[in-house]
Length: 361
Image 1 (cartoon, rainbow, N blue to C red):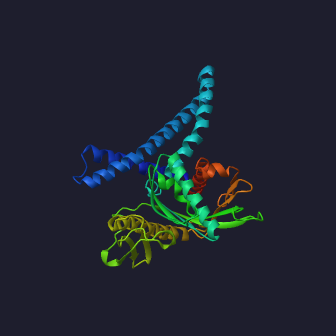
Image 2: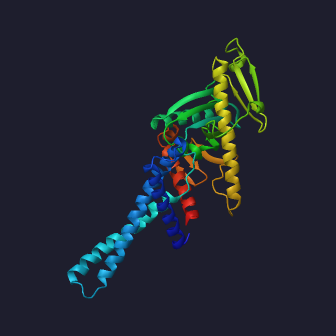
Image 3: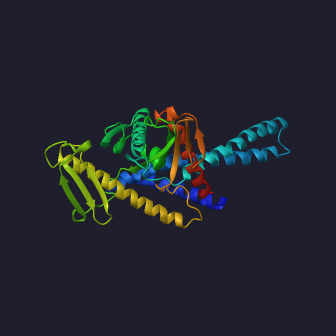
């Protein structure tokens, strides 16, 4: 983006902010929803406009100081003071410019949403199921560190400490923003407890993080749903209860199928299943739109392709490697405790910002 284009964009943002301020002072347009939307946009633009004002003020001061330094008629002491202040301001300009550019990065509208976490055992049999359980606990502990609410929605265990699949609703501030890069194939390398020869086995689990979708985000027609009810069953096939409380919902247009059986109430299972169904359809639409935008670029960065192996957890070396950014840390225990996971997530966020910043520039 050229300097002229950037200045035009900054002028447009400043004008929009002033326009929103006038709208709010006038009490909106008589439409409560429009007023709430304008208030939200105004609040989001305010820090950007403040930074624009700070940058432009600093640029004007730099120009004034430069003129004073070059003024032969000015007092020598005055010119010396101006030179010192000029150096300080010049050093501050890149910081203000960088801060502003980060603010101009297009925001993911889903970042502030809650998230539905899905963890499934992949290839590797019992060991994969045990690893899936480790990952699910890792995210539960991570949520506790961030004081998020972690509500288990479904937990299909194997009876020996592993899990076939598990789902949880995570509620809190910026949950999806911090967890969205976790979607993908997670691989583990370790010696199973049942392995007598000490050979290292490799197995995998898949993680999907979906932004919570509201009814206004995804319109689902009753006619597009096929709902089956059946008797819940636990590990080994024993009956969980004696009523047809388990629910399977199929969204016919997309083929998405969701089952829920953890609750004893059919109504509660249906509500949970609809929440997951809505989130999956919403995320599929987000991915479709992202793919369309990516197709116009030469390279697709961070596609979120869940078939890709994104991270390896190597127990013998206490090593965790994120393959997308070539980051390796030797704190496997702390990562699985949810303590050191932020180190990886922060690096992924910074990499994503750098990519988007390059597009802004």
